[in-house]
Image 1 (cartoon, rainbow over the protein chains, first blue to last red):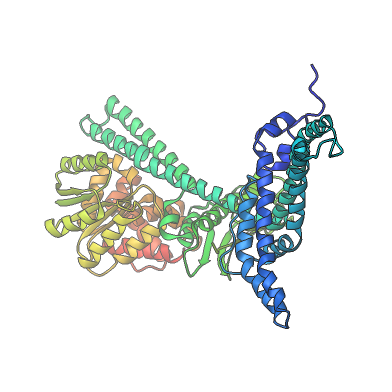
Image 2 (cartoon, rainbow over the protein chains, first blue to last red):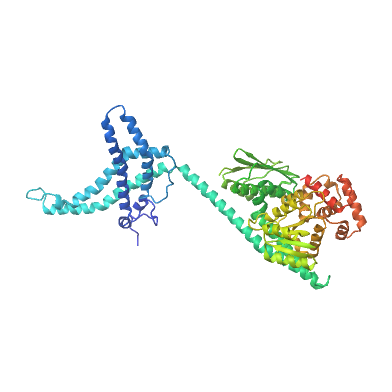
Amino acid sequence: MAAPFLVPAVAPLTPRTALEALAGPPQRFLASAWPWRSLAYLLTGIVPGSAFAAVLTPVRAMDGPAAVPVSLVVAAVLLTPVARFERWRLRYVDRQPVRGLPGGWWPGWREAGHTLVGLFALWWVDLLVAAAAIGGPAVLILSPVVQPIAPEGEATLAETFAGSAVGLLLVPVAAYTVSAWAGARAAMARAMLVPQEAEVREIARSRARLVDAFDAERRRIERDLHDGAQQRLVALSMKLGLAGLDLPPGSPAALRLDEARELAGQALEELRELIRGVHPQVLADRGLPAAVRDVAGRSPVPARADIALDRRLPERVEAAAYYVACEALANVAKHSGAGSCTVRGRLRGARLVLEVADDGRGGADPAGGTGLTGLADRVAAVGGTLTVDSPCGGPTTVRAEIPCER
Amino acid sequence: MRVVIAEDSVLLREGLVGLLERFGHEVVAAVGDAAALIAAVAEQDPDVVVADVRMPPGFSDEGLRAVLELRAARPSLAVLVLSQYVEQTYAAELLDQTRCPGGGGVGYLLKDRIGDVTQFAGAVTTVAGGGTVIDAEVVRQLLRGRRDPVARLSPREREVLALVAEGRSNAAIARALFVTEAAVAKHIASILAKLDLPPDADDHRRVLAVLAYLRAGV
């Protein structure tokens, strides 16, 4: 069976705005709270505008040179409370959260503009739409009561009841009218109050929060492995060693015990490498310079670490920079054929600049391997940039710049 | 020998107590955090302290800090620091802040080494006797950081140098490499000459000189 063609193919399950609700099945829309919410939105819109007009009436009556500055002062004083009110009432027709106002008396240009347009112009329209939508059907429905009936009046009783029926039919139309205008008005308010940069900033913030959450999770994993598996493996290896003391040296049992201890040792070593990749203890304890120095010390290609910072950096910056240093050094060892390399780190203003430079054959292509792309993503997640300079024939320089302010 | 053990994992702490007692050391206190370590040393006045780097309450490097504090107060106290990770940063701090004339022995070992119980007990004895014991992993990293003139050493000489830097005596090096002590002495003389280090008959001073040399180049 075909669906009724008036119903849009895709309707949001739970509408978040009046406009989304409008697009849904009519029976569901009319039975929902959305028409009432829309009406409440329009009616509350009338409040600040009429209040402003009421306050200005005595000012206009002053009729002197002071009138204009006084009305400007009144508008300025009303600006923040009205802006707050505008945001508050937006929730009637728009369930997506809108961030609160900045502190202080000045709410910002966008906010001020939106508020002034509301105060001077739009509230009239709100009033007209609400009045027409309620008034029209109401008068028609009440026509048997309010309409003078023949013989004194002009209409017959039947005509008044017909009018009443038309009025009833107009109620759903009114609901759509009110919701459409309220929805459009709210969409306009959202466009003005929540500029797109703010949404992009919010995305960036949420990405940074994700990175923080991952870092916290890494710390927890490291801690769990350290307190659990590592200690048990050390204890196991110690017990095996002690058991070996009771056996005659060189006996088959002693040899097998030694092999078991060897295996426990290898497991410990692998676990240690794993944990170092997850969250190095020295990074948390001593900060970036020490951690990078230790990584450079383990690098198969002789590496010099030259990191001079005058303070500890935010945790997520340290983690990202450490990751860059580790991955870049691993790349140097795997692909560059370099004889030596240097990791340099400096603070330039509020940005950390970290450079890993080698004397290898170059030709590293960020588009080719996943390693450099992963690095770039990791750096971008903390708001930084990664540049790779690697002409064929070398040398290669990987440079990360990461902002350090909170 | 009177030993104080500081290790927060109960399993390991009890294991260490058993191990050291098995080798005839007297464990006078076994504690689980840095504050208790400082209190135990004040109370027991041990010959040697064996401490984990990472301990409560912060689980970062409280153990190392406590050991450095104890050494600053009493330079003759021998200390052996155990760690789940070998990092040059910690080794450097330990060596820098415990270097003074007449200071007690110093050791820095991976916890993995405990499994070789005989060698571990030997390390405790060496440190208690004023010697230096440095984990082979630290030495490997130090050697890797130096290209010249360490690169001029023969492979055998590099092996010997690594063992010297770990704090082994001539006799121990001879045993490890299956050569005579005389051969070891010859290698060492050659190494010291190539590195421009003064010949020194004293094992401990020699270890410190070699370590200082290796670390200066990193």
